[in-house]
Image 1 (cartoon, one colour):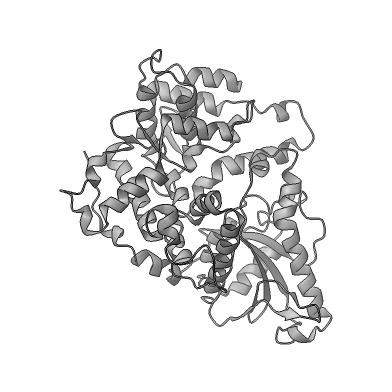
Image 2 (cartoon, rainbow, N blue to C red):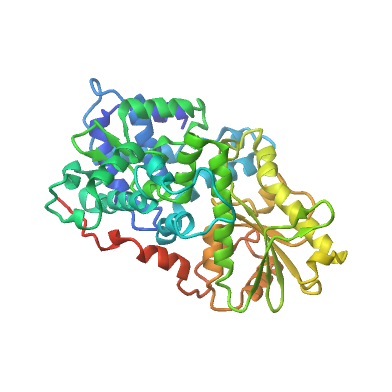
Length: 475
């Protein structure tokens, strides 16, 4: 099916008719669930998110038809049947590009909910930076978000938790000052209202303007940035707020959501300061590895150059870790002609740094004498956001040519899991890099097959939230 035909199918219905039904389905996913089958149709959050966007941008109230659940399923089926012209035309690199696009479209919904929700507080409120910060000083979160990071996360948690029993809608009277539900016992409701209005909600007009900033006409329009990631709630379509796809709130309250808000206000300075906090947060996670010796970057030579960010010395391996506060950009998500250049810019230099540091160890650089040079070495590039599939042989060639130290990309979510494994981390990683059947040397490929313990850093942040005790209202 052509994208234009799919758009026409969606816009048959008035947004006020279609969106509540989309939200009903979008609120039915359990944490971590990405597929439900209804009436023989495979329903996914990414399909619902695009249907909502198309309806909001192209739908018309005055001529839209009444919608039933069957109409939404027809729209989902149309979305599932969209063509990929590159594959049909057998263009060079078509398979690689399709893999990149599907990863950017679909795998963003595979975030571990509790860790993702807790990480914002653990990283931005409970981690000490390595230097004095100019932007992220006391009060920065209130200036940016309308409240503390915990307030921001708590507001999103409230919105998302209320979606399930209320079919994806939120009654703003629940957060009035005279609150019969007792929410004011846990949260300052004036702060909640401010955060909800400024950070989570768009009017129909505002949504259209945000969509225009990222609009990509043509068959790959659906892979472009969806403004629901920035403001997952919409006002003015029905009486209550409507949240078309509840799982998108998890992404909003993650560090990525805060990063985009901060860089929009303060630019690259905020990005650099958040990058420093991220690097120190990675260090906190590495300290959880039993019996590990963890060393920060080392300055060496007369020119005072720096090594990789962290060394982890284990019984049977040394981990060389480079931290990159990066996330997939539009060219990567769209897999356009700039994807290779962008991946090289964001990730390629990290592998060069790992190999350079390894060579310094081989050369006997004096400042690195405390790092054992006789043990096997494994390089890890830790990213703030998942770069799904970048370790696969299909994609790796886009940004990396020299192998050097056995190395791969791992997201912070993967690291948070790996440091809590019940078996030795070095044994796990050595098995992973030496197993020819591993799916592109990805830590995520072993989720579910290894026993892990509770991550104490994540648990500490989770327990710091009073909102975990809130009883969410229903109809």
